[in-house]
Amino acid sequence: MRAPDTSSHDAALHVLKEVFGHAAFRGAQGEIVTHLAGGGDALVLMPTGGGKSLCYQVPALLRQGTAVVVSPLIALMQDQVAALTQLGVRAAFLNSTQDLEQVRQVERGLLDGSLDLLYVAPERLNTPRLLDMLDHVRPALFAIDEAHCVAQWGHDFRPEYLQLSVLHERFPQVPRIALTATADPATRAEIIDRLSLHDARVFVSSFDRPNIRYTIVDKDDARKQLLRFIRNEHPDEAGIVYCLSRKKVDETAEWLSAQGLKALPYHAGMDAATRAAHQARFQREEGLIVVATIAFGMGIDKPDVRFVAHLDLPRSVEGYYQETGRAGRDGAPADAWMAYGLADVVQQRRFIEQSEGSEAFRRLSGAKLDALLGLCETAQCRRVHLLAYFGEQGEPCGNCDNCLNPPETWDATIASQKALSAIYRTGQRFGAGHLIDVLRGKDSERIRQFGHDALSVFGIGKAEDDHHWRGVFRQLVALGIVRVDHEAWGALRLTEAARPVLRGEQLVMMRRLSARQRDASTRRTRPAAPLSMAGVNGGLMSELKAWRLNEARAQSLPAYVILHDSTLAELAREMPHDLEQLAGISGMGTRKIERYGDALMALIRRHVTG
Image (cartoon, rainbow, N blue to C red):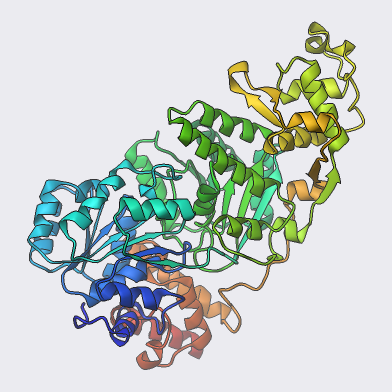
C-alpha cells in the first residue's frame, strides 16, 4: 500500500488516515515525516509511547523503494511487522528465528520491490550479502531505532551499532532517521558523531510522561513492600519488575507466584524457547507480571503495562527513564515504583570500581550514578528533577510521591557527626550494619570482640532506631561525604568532604520520611486518565474486549495488534451506525475496516437492540 511519490503534507495526512486510521499527527510527527519524506536526515528524541514508529513508517509509504528499519530485538520486529500487516502494509523481517526458505522469500521480496518495510538486526544489515542486495534495489530510507545503543558510554550499548556508519558511506543519497526515547545531551552528540548525522535536523520532544507516577521508597523488606504495592495499586494488572541478578529474578518470580500472583521470570540465563514463551504470554495475556533483568522490555509495544517496579537501583537516570517508560504507553495512569537502600548504592559503586573500562569510563559512570542518587534523595518534585537531567524545565507535577506527601528536611549535622565519628573510631574497617550496632549500643559478641563497647561513640545514637541510621549512612554516601571501600569488604571510609562536617563548618540537611512515605503502599487518588472513559458504554466495552480477545487468539497475535484500548473506548462511546461513521474512529484505517468492519457493526447493533 503506497501513496504517490511525494513529500507533501497532504499526502502524509492521506497515508496517516487511510492506513493508520488517524486524522492528525501528534506534536512534531508531521514535521518529521515531511522532512524525512523529502530526503532529509533526522535525529528524533521522543518518549516511549509518543509515536516514534509513525515518523518513519509514513515516509516509508510516501517514498519509492523499501524502507530498511534497524531494530535491536526480535520481539520488536515481530510486533511491528504483525501490526503493519494488519494495516495492509507489506512488511517483513530478517532474523535468526527464520529458516532458509523463509529468509530467501523475504530476500526475493526485497529484490523484486514488493516490500514497503524490512526490519533487520544491525548484525544482519552489516553482512556483505544484505549490503550487496541493497546496492541493487532502491532503499526508501534507513531508520535506526533505539539509536542510543550506539553510545559506547550509554546505558544500553550495542557494539554492532557502531558499524552503522556504513549506511552514510555506502548510500549517501538515502535519508536516515535515528530514533530514541532516551539520550542526554552528551549521548545525543555521540549518536550524531558515530552515525555521521552532522547535517541532520534534531527533533526533541518533551521527555515528560505525565501519566506516570514516580515513587521511590526506602527499602525495608523490599519484596513485601512490592507485594503491598501491587495488591493495593495494581491487582490483576500487567507489570514489569526489574532486578539486577538472574538469581534474584528467579527467586522473586517464584515468591510472587507463591503469593497468588501470575508472575514469570525472564533473563538471558534461560533457554531461548522459555524466554520467547514467557514474552509471548506477557504480550498476549492480561494481568501478567514479568520479573526480569534489563534484558527484557526494550521495544515491547504492549500498551497496557500499568506499572514498572525496580527492586534494585538502575545504573543511570537514562536507564531508569528507559525502563519506567515501558509503563503506560496507552496514556492511561501508570506507576514507576522503586525500593532503594544503602546496599543498592554499595552494589552500584562496586560495579563501577570493578569495571574493566577506562578511568574516564568509570568517572562518567560514577557521575551518572550520582545523578540517579540525586533523583532518589531529592525532596523536590521527582518529575522536575528528572526533566532537568534531560535539559528540560518542568513545574511540580502534583502526582509524584514527593508532591503528594512532601518529605521533611531536617538538620542532620549532629547525626552525621556521630555517624562519621563511629566510622573513624572503629578504624574505617566496618560496614553500616556494624556501625549502627555501635551507635545504638548493641551488646553483641562481635562488638565485644573488637572492643567497640569501650569507644566513646558506643551508644551515642541509641535514641534513634535502625531505620533512622540506615537513612543517615545512605545519604552520607549519596552526598559523597562517605565512600564504600570494596577492597575492604564494603567498609565505609571518610572522604575529604567529611572534614568540614566533623569540624562543624558545614551544615548537612537530609530527607526524613514518615512510615507512610517509606512504604507508599496505600491506594491513592489518581488524576484524570488521559485515556478518558467518560461517556463509554461499559457493557459494550466489555463485549468489544471479548471480541478482540477471540480475534487475537484466532490469529495468534497480541490483542493490542488487533485494536488498541483507545479505539475500543471510542467505539463504545460513539457507537457508529455504519461503515462511514466507523471510518471516523481513530485507529480504524481502510484495511481494518475491510477486515473487521462488518463484525464490529454487527456487535454494536446487537448491543444496541439488546
